[in-house]
Image (cartoon, rainbow, N blue to C red):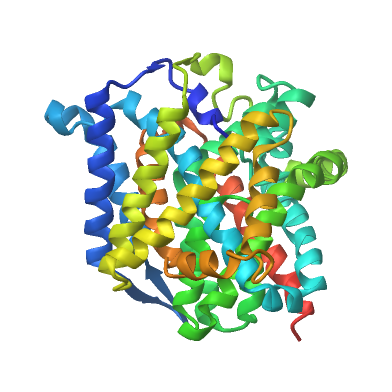
Length: 449
């Protein structure tokens, strides 16, 4: 979720070394899109018994993706080409740190509500871990997908999960093709799909909102933001802070523990289930997945330019600028108050960056969670309450719009590869994403009855 390099960046055969004017173009484009998306606001429509809410973050993702796809038709001054699109993905990884800091402060400031969640918060992780394969694997086998199904359904296929498959099977294996297809599908459609699904399920009012919030913590920052945004849209405003805190805690837990759950539990179980279910379910389809998606080798290699501190700084400033715009336009918070909160967030991210350089063997996410949890506990330090109060002025959803704008630019480069994927693996990937959300929600619901 917050890694400094993305596997999707390995797909196009191009160098990532945007010039200064290109970086400026990208920065300005992000701020313009955020302003437009926040001005459009929320649009809702009815589907059967439920409603679908399109939040500003969804408009931002769609506008950015369209801008990126139209690059060849635009003047050079406003063009966001493939190189800048890949760079946007790198900015996204760095910019997500600000989002995680806001999540951690939200958790710290709402510890009583998080503590009340208790066992539900712990056991819902089983739903995230096994929900993907319980729902996704049978569908994959019925559609005729073979060993690719293991890579596509043992998790939601983010960066850490690709590392697991790469180490165990290799990215040129069937399992490697499966997890790569899952990654591409999640990158292109994940946030939009989970936003629509979570909003629709929330509109049915059959689950406790706290269960839905836990389900939203799938381990991906952008997907979690999209899900909790639409969930909050279907619940009273006074519940928003509690639900965001619960979703943030679940997301951090999934991000930190999910890697180990996937490595030691869900992948072995998925492979074991495949061996036993494939002879039974596989015979219902005549399709055989010989090559569902491109391998890393067939897609080419990217020559990466160094992503240095100045690039991270640009990512943080870009996201902060978007938050400032959204907080002002949509949530009517004075610029000075928003600015004070953003200064706290930026100071924390700089502190974490320094510690990460001093402790290179410690995972960045662990340092981030440790620092922000300590700083975010009310009254623990002399300045804790002041920091929490300042950051509390920043609406959580204001972070999601610039984050998904960068995601929109980033996914534009993956669409040509996405179009090459079999529709079967796309269905399987989206089913796995639905499984992790619904699985965690169902388990959490047992504790809220």
